[in-house]
Length: 323
Image (tube, rainbow, N blue to C red; front, side):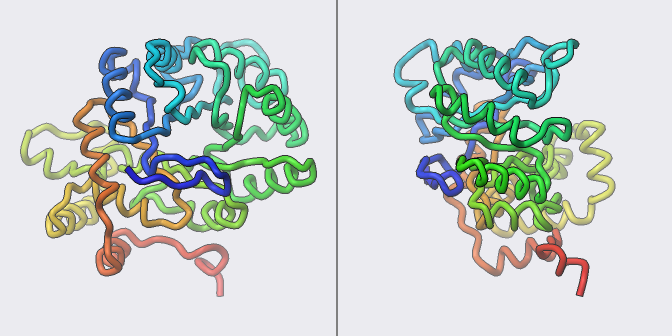
């Protein structure tokens, strides 16, 4: 496994981040524990979760699964760089969602209990909260850092101007601010190249792409349909119909390279200068093993150029759309 620093920090994280969103709804607790054990054995030290994962409001099912895994001991917690998130609704009452100081205080304590740990390495805002001023957010986060309950703060699904706004407010408070941003980024969805990636690079914020295989669309969906006869789910099928020509060309090119389409998609993200670690969310151990192979794949410039031909990207704004 290769390691890099998370953004401008001195924190070393693996080039792949283990996403845990499927733990509970699609992956049993026993299988999730096996996946996490295997990830650690293979050198993956960066795990990502969220208080809403498990998708039963207020239950924090996925965090509980991870907490039970930590409780087994064996250095599991000590070896893991643990990231979780807050923002989504954890109940129906006011202040049970968002980024108010009250919500931040309540949700960090709840996550710590479920995760059975005394601190969160990377505490991430799952979405921008337009109703809460940045001074309030940073004051609450500063207190958590001072208490040792949180070490670093990150964001997810922020626009480029949100990153700038957050960092400039943090700078005025002499606070480190954001060290990471989780964005929807893959070969097919490259909108963040307009402003999010330039802002992240400017401020030293490490980018953690989620859905690196675009919901399975970049994971060899056409070949799987030919081999099994089973069609993809409704959402993937709709996107596949729209992008069929691109996906067909992509799978053909991956075959020419002699690699699985999913490996090529991850290797492409790993070649992006702003990217710290794509977040892979395996449902099974086999899917984890396939993702691990991508770290050893280096795409040359000719291959990168061909992928840009199949999936055209963006130049930074405003040059992308203006003179």
